[in-house]
Image 1 (spheres, one colour):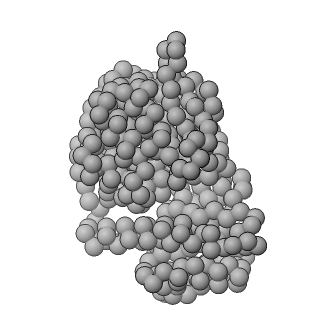
Image 2 (tube, rainbow, N blue to C red; image 1 turned 180 degrees about the horizontal axis):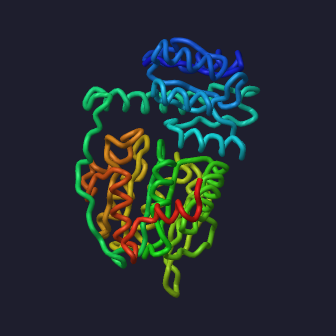
Image 3 (spheres, rainbow, N blue to C red; image 1 turned 45 degrees about the vertical axis):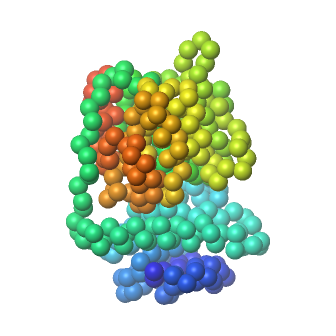
Length: 361
């Protein structure tokens, strides 16, 4: 796989090149020092994937990304600061077409940069490999049709909608959230693999852009129909039944040794126990198989699981695991998932027109 590394720091370019080329299947074909250099080399070299810094001279990473996606669409992993401003800029990059990001904190350069190796290489292989498989099976300009027709439900069929998401998920989460109205007959709860500062920024953005109330989950928060709740990054989230009826969130650090925080398996498993057969679960794009165990438990309790279709995923990992487990009722595009959720709204209508009128931008 051929990689272009873009960063204004010569040290970072050398370090990222060393990390990437430590894997024999990956090759850094060139580096670029600013956004304009990145555009020129992308057009000329046509890499399989780009790692792209955000803050750079001449042209920043966001402007470069816009040009790259317009001129020579390529898989891009952003290298982002683990700060509030860094998270906001990264979320913009994901909306512009970046596939994923790797977050760096203040110790990224001064301490062991090799700590990043496993995450970066895994993401490069998953994202680049999926793009290649889609291109080989469908052709670059042909988009395969979803494998299922969207099911039709009605308001009151479910007590809770549980969503699991990872690589490539934030834009899909936004698409779904902006399709909902306050007429939604069940609360929507989401576990997205992201650091805490990123989930906080995502929640703030979507609360400003959506018709529904969008919350960054907190321990003890009660769940209300017509509202959406996002698990805080770096924490585990569970749903539990209240003694007097209804449900609330439990947010803590247990299990402390879990690979993912939040873990979709931990979240889905709690939902299977607390809500059971009146659960609608959605598994969105993501690496690995986190969530398949919880999805099985929801299915065993009589709940319904839907997955994002392979051709619309940045990485068809988590949905694939659920599909292969035989517990998905349908494999759908993000638009079809929105259409399905619209049937749970009392009006049966999609919210996007009212979003445009009330909260433009």
